[in-house]
Image (tube, rainbow, N blue to C red; front, side, top):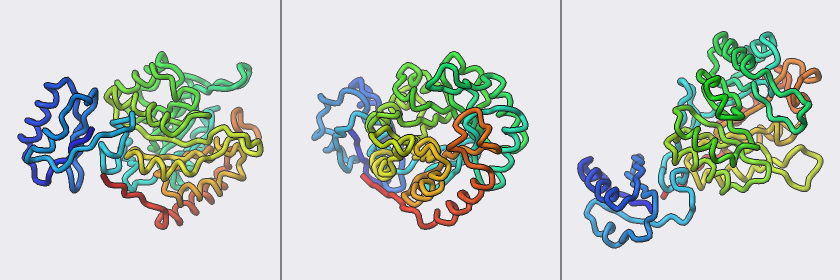
Length: 339
């Protein structure tokens, strides 16, 4: 349930209404927008008398929300969320490219790539220290050493770093990692999501291989309900019957998510297609469709990459893609869904 207040309501009136709602054992989430202040009611609102709230002088309207996700719902937060990552912003008109190798392999590799992608306009550096692999015999990442090398690249370039966390036991290693990525395989690891909700770091949440958009939003809700509202959603392709691509990139997820939620939406064309030649057209399409950012794999020698070489761009190819992306950004779709 949401309560939309009239303009120019005094802070003490809002507090009085919140206290009354809390007395009913219902939590509140307040969102202050340009035109309205919205109080979201979180909990069992079945016994709340809508007519009684509607009759209050400060209330413009009251609506029940049918969707099970509340805090991730645009109806609770009319304005687009802006996630600030050490001064690098994403969402609310702020567009970023997250670029780097699938896996950190060496100091020379990650630092060289970091310098290249920064020069081409990337705002954040990605790199895997812990790698979930289908085969137990495949390269699993450098673990703690990989994070140390990412931090070295961050020191040299100033780029905030994004890396995937596989287990909450590893959390102390991620103390200086700027954005924690939850991979597709962990999207519904609800115990992990609840724990990530207790920390004050942005979380990049990838959609699962066979999960619906509503399930993605419910996973975001787990994080937000535990207290951390700095969530970035990532569409990285879903599994379909098609075999010519690694996954099927669901570009329609962009406008659907923009309608349903205020959270930033990032597209990962590398994992979706699984082939380097698909990255440019999918990145441009996602940008035109109004994504808040892209996540692109870049390797200085894809043929010898220890992980996902076939889908990685060279630094030169990435520079070409980034240049085109920034050229079409002014013409991208915008979404202004209002209550």
